[in-house]
Length: 358
Image (cartoon, rainbow, N blue to C red; front, top):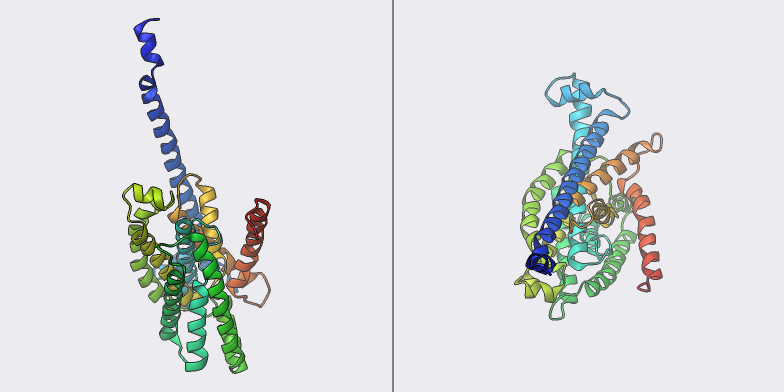
């Protein structure tokens, strides 16, 4: 056997081929990730344009664009700039907040049930906001602030209750579900003790709605996301090691608990500001992450894709809420629940068949 042949048989001689294969797979993954992100962005923009064009007064897209750039008559400007544009923008921002929050929670805790509307974060926002509104007559920006405080307080309480020399995802999810159930009881107790008209208004907010929203809700949410999203991007550097498990992450030199706490804090704040703007819009955070990860398999948490998926879900759901029934505007949360509830049942059925169900 010749020396050359022996060299070809050694593992070292095959190493360049393996490196090229890995590089090729990674390149394909990145290319698909970019293409999917662009496709989602195009879909969001298209749905956004449809939201501005269609309604009781149907407007051609050209006229919408003209109005957005300062043209059009008084009626067009009122319809587009005061009624439809803030609502559509709010749908995008709320979807980004919930979609990004759910993806972070599910990735950090490595549990598909770990979304803010399941583990009690949204329930905390609801409990404080409803109590402030019905018992102390708080409204406007102060009410939004109370919802944010409630979500952060609930997140901190759940984290502390789940702490046992560290936080395990399964334990935090179970404690969060129980904590959220208790907070929901507080909400219904306060509503039962309140005036019927006030309770009905609170119930509409609890469903999650964009009806009647204006620029007064857009600017605070936009400002909050402009701060929290970059912080989430910075904190997400720890997400890759954390997804490998605590021991492996620590072995790679990652600061496990500070990294996890920063990510959970950002995710809680994202859910809180989105809830403050539109109420607890159910299931957006729950389904956006899994959909995004299926679109770009092997790309980790797929946070940008989850944010765009959340925005698209809320835009489509709100358009359906406005136009599914003649002369009736449904809360957007009703439509997202129709989307998300079957997915939850499917997830639980799969877990049960796999032997991990209850």
